[in-house]
Image (cartoon, rainbow, N blue to C red):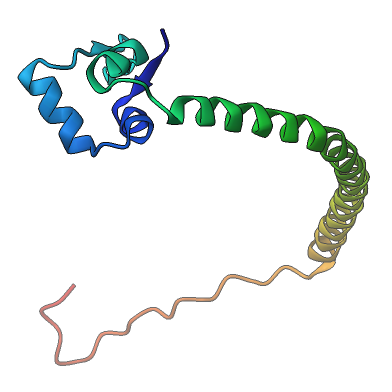
Length: 142
């Protein structure tokens, strides 16, 4: 039989989760632990054994089949819209790459112009530091 989570088992049986936990603790209902996630699962055969016939089980299966068919019908439209978006994004990407190249070239031109201007500027002489003069009353300093 199929394994369902405790929450799903509560939905199937129409019982509260706390009731299911109580039955598990008392040993009336057995569970299996998933090795990957460590979550407790209950077999539907256990639910039928403890609670009798589960009326919601067929409704849930029917709902899942209808949801799958709805997804299959919506998929072609989604594919076409996604392909249109992909094409638009590829065009935008190409445009942005060209713009980046243009800006990079402009930046290189500006750098060369700055270097040319700097090379033509006259060199400024270093400022002359005035030599401190000794005052007559500071004869003890050398």
